[in-house]
Image 1 (tube, protein in one colour):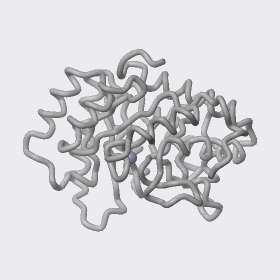
Image 2 (cartoon, protein in one colour; image 1 turned 120 degrees about the vertical axis):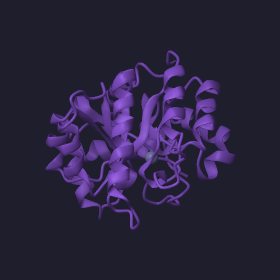
Image 3 (cartoon, rainbow, N blue to C red; image 1 turned 30 degrees about the vertical axis):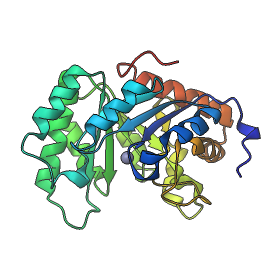
Image 4 (cartoon, protein in one colour; image 1 turned 60 degrees about the horizontal axis):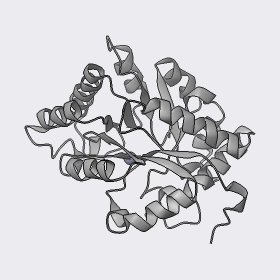
Length: 269
Ligand SMILES: [Zn+2]
């Protein structure tokens, strides 16, 4: 068992997770209890395709500490229905949700870049029109992403690069384009030098932490058995890489996340 004693009474916000997926779908309540016991006060759950939007919305309605974003993830662009954008807009217009998870994924073997970009930009436009924060997935497409952001006449009020896997050189470029950077458990692996180097470059007011559960577990945990309760391990590793105090990192990343998602969901406890 993990020893949480060093990190008790933390104020934590999990800026990105998928509580509808994997083992969490069928064992959510005990996982929520463990998360709360570990100090996680809010979990930002992202829908990824039309099939999971109603369920994810329901999670937000039934739990005061779950904040919801809905979007079409690049992995599901190919299977989208003809009415996906109309349906998404209907939900965004009638519920206080963020837009996400959306993005660009150039690491996919079979992909259609034009379709990915069209779907991404349509959702960015939706976020602009409704003034919602956006959660962005980006793999091997950071240059293109910055080009697209710079080409937009207007951008959403908040944008986060979740599970950041880019270089440390890209951090100031993305921050200048208006992005927050969210760090996941990949930094707990010493071999992941790229992500670890990026941690120290992120400005305090743009830094977020996330579990991305049920995937990307911290080192030592079954990779697909990740859950928000492991967030303290990520904060501890992040604080070490930044030369800061874990409780302080927990506090300011939580404050950043609350500000980021301020327009989403009910008032937070
Ligand atoms: Zn995700």
